[in-house]
Each structure stands twice: as structure tokens, then as C-alpha cells.
Picture (cartoon, rainbow, N blue to C red):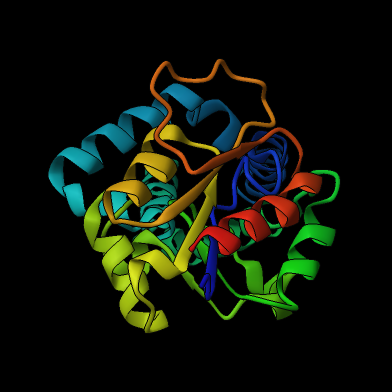
Length: 234
């Protein structure tokens, strides 16, 4: 019997890049209004170099992407000549602007309907490698909890994040279905943990020669029916 359904978020319930691009644009505009030389001093290439250095110096930052963004923004603002305390304060405020855009996602057709319907029967949780905040989204009331790298200090497909999710939910592996778009992070990771899986292939990718998922869908309108079929077989 299926008890818990976990959802990847980005590119599973919504397309992430439009939100990221809009969020970056809003944040950069906010910074340019407050730091006169930001536009001239800080480029995408400059930020990428800061990120590469930061990850080399502290690999754990890959599990703390929000903290890393604030760190990089602080470094960028110091490069623009701001003192440390002012740079850090502005970096945190700029990151808040970014997160407003980051969370202003446009759900895929039928995403909210599928989540709402499934929540009538199953416990739901988010299991993401990103930093989207479902607590400020329309589906928040349907999700019992959210697991992400900053919480667990692990990323899909690493076993730890799946194990920690099971422990938090108090479920056995065969009682869970993970729904996600990434064949490596979502499907292989969850399958290795002994979970049932649904590959969300909205992008129309070629199916692997040796499928590793329990089921696959092309539209989220199919999800409730597929979950019911998996439940019937367990």
C-alpha cells in the first residue's frame, strides 16, 4: 500500500528557468539601483568565477545554495567597494528579492489539480535539490514537509536524502512513490533506495533503452491514475 508520494519540484511541477531568469533580472535591477557601479563591475562571468572558487574552497556549499548565493553577492558587493557589513546586509536583501521571483513559478497544466487530488488519499512531501519554498505557494497546505540539500546536507541521487526522507515520514521504501523529471537524480536515486518511481517526461525526452522507473507520464493529468495503478500492485 502506498502511503507517501514525494515530488521533485523544478521541471516536475513547473518549468524552472523562466522563474530563475526573471528572479535574476529583478535582483540585478534592485542592486543596480542601490550600487552605482554594480552594472559595470559585476558580470555573469565574474559571478561564475566567484562560484567556482567558493565551491573549490568549501565543497559543502553545494548543499547550501541559498547561503552560497548570499556569500557570492557579498563578495561581489565588496568588489564594488562596499564595506563588509553593508555588503552583507545588501546581499541578504538582494537575495530576498531573488527569492520572490524564484517562488513566482507558473505551474504546469494540471499540476495543482493533480496535487490536490492526490492529497485526498496520500501523504505528500517535496524532495528537491533546489531552494524553492513551497510554503509560500498555492500547494503549501497539501505538503506535509519538504526535504532539500540544506536540510539533509545531501543531494539526490545520494542515498542519504532518501533515507532521511523515509525516517522523517516513518515509512518503508515500498510504501513511497517519488515523482520527478530527472532520470539520474530522481529515478535512479529513488529506485536505488527501493522506492517506486514515476518519471515525468513533459519535455518529451527519448525513453532510456532500459527503463528504471515504475511508470512514466507525459502530462500531469495522468498522474493520479498512474499512482492508483502502482498502489493496486503493492
